[in-house]
Image 1 (tube, one colour):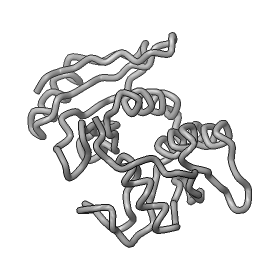
Image 2 (image 1 turned 120 degrees about the vertical axis):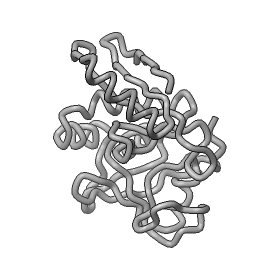
Image 3 (image 1 turned 90 degrees about the vertical axis):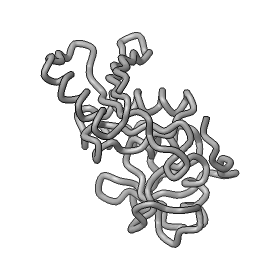
Image 4 (image 1 turned 90 degrees about the horizontal axis):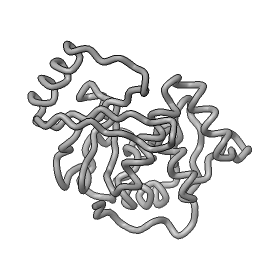
Length: 186
């Protein structure tokens, strides 16, 4: 579904900064963003195109995915982090990291563009084509298999989704490695 540019021909370099990864090289930042709307250009709330003049900020979920796909090499100082070291860093920064990563990875593998859903009160906003091309038709909340959801939670989520004109999805990473999606149409 993603209509973005092509994968970078070589992995780009990212630097750990707090609980994020920053791609400081502007050409590399543009290439990663153009590949399929990864990250956010620093200080550019809604980039109109790929010609921004700012480093690219990636959260640890995005950085892990890009590292696993061979598009990003992550450094902490002069030390290159392995995928498992980066994943451990993410897990230490967020107790839900593994579940979030599994859902993010599954949605990306299905061809969707996945961004932070914080402004919608959810984990992810999911686009068919990408920000600036279409509006995110889905907001996704990640839950664990054994996690309870109340009727009030569902009503609250449904009202929020209707207010922002989105479909609400509960994503549940399963023990068998698959992700189950419960879709509530808005």
